[in-house]
Image 1 (cartoon, one colour):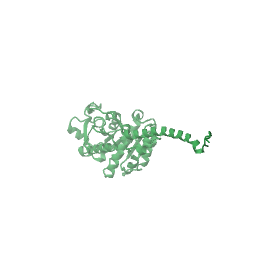
Image 2 (cartoon, rainbow, N blue to C red; image 1 turned 180 degrees about the vertical axis):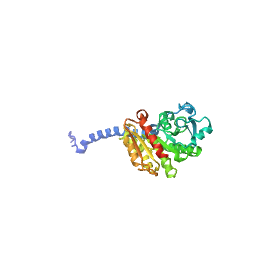
Image 3 (cartoon, one colour; image 1 turned 90 degrees about the vertical axis):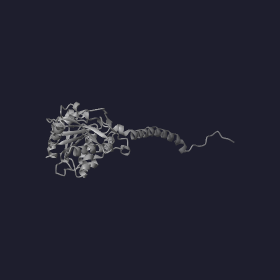
Image 4 (cartoon, rainbow, N blue to C red; image 1 turned 45 degrees about the vertical axis):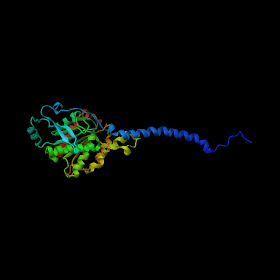
Amino acid sequence: MSSDLAPPTSPSARRSPRLTWWKRWLLLLTVPYLGALIMLAAFQRSLIYHPFAAKSLPANQAGFGTGRAHDVSARTEDNLDLRGWLVLAKGHVAGTAEQFSAELAKGRPVVLYFGGNAANRNYRMLEVQVLTEAGADVLIFDYRGYGDSPGEPSEEGLARDARAVWRFATESKKIESQRIVLYGESLGGGVAVRLASEMSLNKTPPAGVILRSTFSSLTDAAASHFPFIPVRWVLIDRFPSDQRIRDVTCPLLQLHGRRDTIVPIRLGQKLFAAAPDKSASGIPKIFVDLPQADHNDVMETSRSEVSKAVRDFLPLAIP
């Protein structure tokens, strides 16, 4: 005899609809999150590097005046020709190749400038002016893929570019390493620290390193902006400057805006803490806090402080 009564429902059966509901919610949350991770992993370099390409950036149109800025080119180990300028210190000009060589031989500091992750060398005019007003010649190249330099940027590619610039200065132009100061702005700080580390380990360190608004590592910087994404798992280009700076033996100057919203000042302080307290020659490391500066307005808000710090530092690095 059949019964119209339903069989008793077990507690687990009664809970199953609720479990299904939560599984659906979990799926709805997880799929977009995993999709975002996949997109980040696949397109991360387009998020890191923002080059402004240009067909040509001639030195005579850079605005430094006649005879001060000269076009230069450096060949990388993977056969790319990087384009750049060599800008003579303020008050110095050279109309011919012989005069140009004679100016470089006068013993002034030579700054190798490594720019940030965006734009090209044409956007670094104000900082180049500060350096040349401090009495230094400045060698500034565009990384691969930036300005009129060919190629595609990556951490290893930028390291090759930095080595090419170093070889150009020391071998092609016969500039002694003891006269060379590396200047790294933002992402360029990671490039400069790596080059300084390599040259220090090679027993041919630069005279000094100046870092402006740079990070302890790119993973730290990315994690500060994307705390809910495991960037340390997926990031390919990491720029671990806080590990590499331990090997740097030359004097160090760091400048960082207290209001920096791109690279928080605590990351600059973390990098500074990782650096040796003194150079091999006994010069204490220097950190300059720029109270009014954010990340991209340093020259507008703090040019005088930067200028003073650079002027004070160069004689320490190159007595």
